[in-house]
Image (cartoon, rainbow, N blue to C red; front, side, top):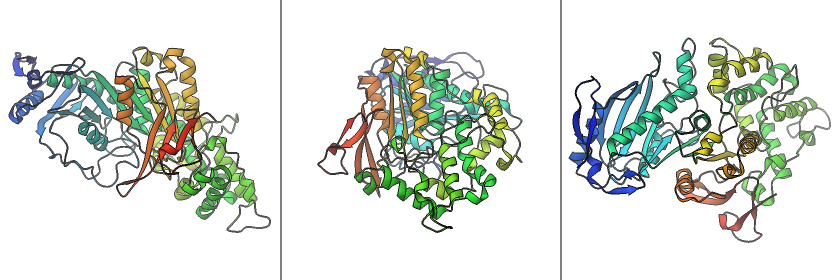
Amino acid sequence: MMIARLRRRDGGALSPVICWAAFAALAVGLAPSAKARTIEGAKSACVALAKLSLPNTTITAAQLVATGNLKLPEQSGGPPNAAGPAPPDTSSLPAFCRVEATLRPSADSDIKMEAWLPVSGWNGKFYAAGNSGWAGSIPYRPMVAGIAAHYATAGTDTGHEGNNGSFIPGHPEKLVDYGYRADHEMTLRAKELVQAFYGGKPKHSYWVGCSLGGMEALVEADRYPQDYDGIVAGAPMNPMTMFNAAQMWPAWLSQKYPDGIIPAAKFALMHDAVVKACASPIGQRQGFIEDPSACNWDPAALLCKSGDAPDCLTAAQVDMAHRFYAGPVNPRTGEAIFPGPPFGTEGDIGRNGMTNPVGIAIDLYRYAVYQDPDWDYRTMDYDTAITKARTEVDPLMRAGTNLNAFFDHGGKLLLHGGWAEWRNGTELRDYYLKVLQNAGPKQAEQLRLFLISGMGHCGGGNGPNEFDKLGVLDAWVDKGKTPSRLLMSKTLQGKVVRTRPACAWPAVAKYKGNGDEDQADSYVCSNP
């Protein structure tokens, strides 16, 4: 029998605590398994974690959650298009030890985290779930997926509550927590809980996140290359400041060029025209452009012959379309700040409206860059504002392009983004190429990029938009199966209605010429 000696938080004498996993045989690699064990034994070992002393940490709860007995808040967090209004199904989740803790690496830190440790059948690995938006809550939905797959799982609120940036002014340490520190501290503490509960370190550690979670992923790989062995970074907002500047661009343009404002109905007209011009026949039928980067559609094709009409664009509207597709530019230098939305995303622009910029984008500049609740995007100077953002905020929440330290310890990085979302895939491609340029030939095999046709931001869109992220990552890291093709699926009302491959860039999926257009087997990956 193995005895884990854990020091009490009050600094008292060491007391023996039975590590229940020691009764089990080794599962995989170095990590002991959590095989069959009496519920009472597991409960005792779980409750004992409350006495564990960890740096800058107060463990506020440690309790056993019986099989299928997890209760979560109505809004469960997770990436956009994934959380939904209802909590995930937890009725069949295996029993696990739920540890809740508060981390205070600075005097002004208040980072909440949870670690979920399977009672039996632990696969010997650790998985951390990324956040979305402003975070501000534990990402329960992706954590549920992790525990269902028998991973030791963890997540954090990144140090504040609420889905906005109002926590930042006057609290520089909280901005540091949000930018990078909370994720790293959560990672360290979660691994220590794994060590205490199972009596061994995880064989592999994985991070999977999209949107903010994708940016968190890249910052982890850059700042703390030893934290994770495998990372999936979806639609990373890197740098977030520049992407948010692009999100405000159409609304900012509408203030400067009011005659060019394009009504929502005309965005639908533009979308139909660009899909007809640039999508394959299958893409036209399914409603998306396979490769917007190869599309050369010109909005002038819809120029009205005289006056204005519902089925055409005025000269001022054509000029406006050219401007927002190009993305924000520095008015003084002409420098491109961030790519505009790709062709095929006109629906997103039409739904948001040219005069209604994305709130999270305004919040970043209002609270993080200017730290002024009354800041108005309509007064934004795309010269001085961008300089200020790059100087004061980017260093806290931006990943560089030299990730060699992550690759040197064997880390694998899968980048992915949708072609049917505002965040232009060409920016992610350019980041990938810069990382690749810094990496050596061997390290290049540890990096893959997938630009997914018809997928929106972390999901959604007309094309297949889901794949087994953890499964693909684990097969790559643990079994050496480098992904060259992802099996994407689209689900409606609980039923898979379409599958299609996503190919490792620069390859694209092409129809074989025969077979069901809605089945992945009818496509091959080939270079353009």
